[in-house]
Image 1 (tube, helix red, strand yellow):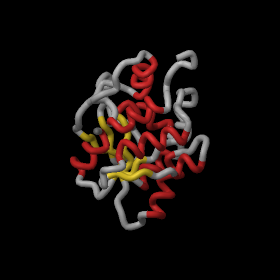
Image 2 (cartoon, helix red, strand yellow):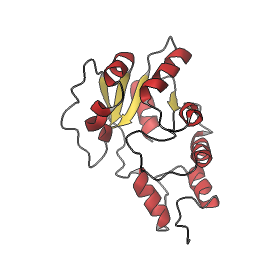
Image 3 (cartoon, helix red, strand yellow):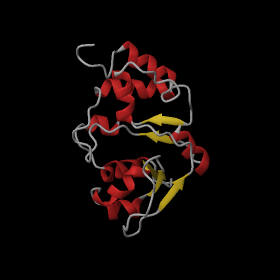
Length: 178
């Protein structure tokens, strides 16, 4: 839903989803296997021409910094204005991103406010071009979604149906005893 909101509000040509192999600022976050994460993403958007998936960061493996990915996409799309879409909960951490001032020169950021993470002040980063997307706010995180699966609760209306089917068929996010 967030990708759709940004696509529509900013009139983008397409949205490229870039799953991270390992987010630098989330080193201990539990994740499913790369193949499973990629398959769920494909299942969620396979019918929608507005979105595509890049496995660039997954192929690189390990921690990959946004600056490296942005340089990659600038080479692929030299004649396009690129935006990096983030959750508003990342704004207070943006100053911690690797080479953030260089990144701010290369791209513009679009953020989606997340319930429970009100935006009080914009980060003080030289050259930062930041745009807000007023979309449909869902008060649920990926951690909470995984916890719902562990507890046997429904993911309906939070996750695309085909991704839910994949999660169930592959017994993802269940305790090892389940």
